[in-house]
Length: 304
Image (tube, rainbow, N blue to C red; front, side, top):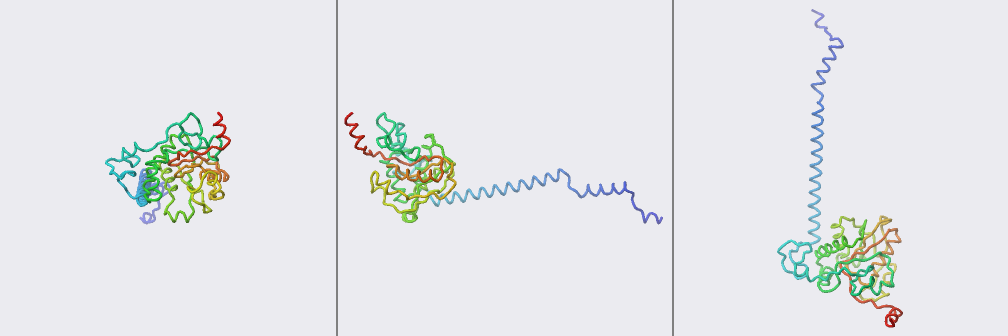
């Protein structure tokens, strides 16, 4: 039987042996799909863990930026329930909200039937309009003063929530949020830029990206010490735009208080020159100061 020792299978038999070996060694389609599914689940699990870790980091950062405070931002009374504005019900009722009838340009509340205040009847701003949820008086003054000079940064959450709600009612649209900058010297002295805090709070609530597009390149005198045209002259050449991303974008400029509009107007000019499509302004409060009319306008009103 020497032939048996030298037995070699023919091609057909060899193929049968090969098929058997392949079936035993190669994974089935179901097994391959199972492995792919397992790998996919592992990837999703890793992404979920990374997302949860990022959320925890952001929460920790926010807690560090805004220390937790369980009292009313105005009167200091303990809050017995979670509220949208971190204010007790009594202080919410005391807030000087801007009514429905306001100047179509600067947003200052109006007492007569006019569409524009005395100033905006003959003055054209570079921005489209300003909107503010509050007038700068009473409880509003207390909150803004505590934010800027009392270093109570958590108040930006309350003001930011009010501003975000005002934006949604205003009809304004925005692709990017920017804010009024401070010089490095000014920001170092205060420890923060209140307009930036408000901008990031509003952006987070509205899901609109915030871009630090503006840079203050010149020291200026305090605006509160100046009047009328002095404010505009004081800010000439004070700002520049550092980002090209503003081109063809609708911008929302954030500041804390709208007084004469000089700061917002100068910032809007710079942004429009950099290619922005349009600029709207959102501030936490607008002053109710009466702006003196031009002598000619005043005389016409007296004669009529």
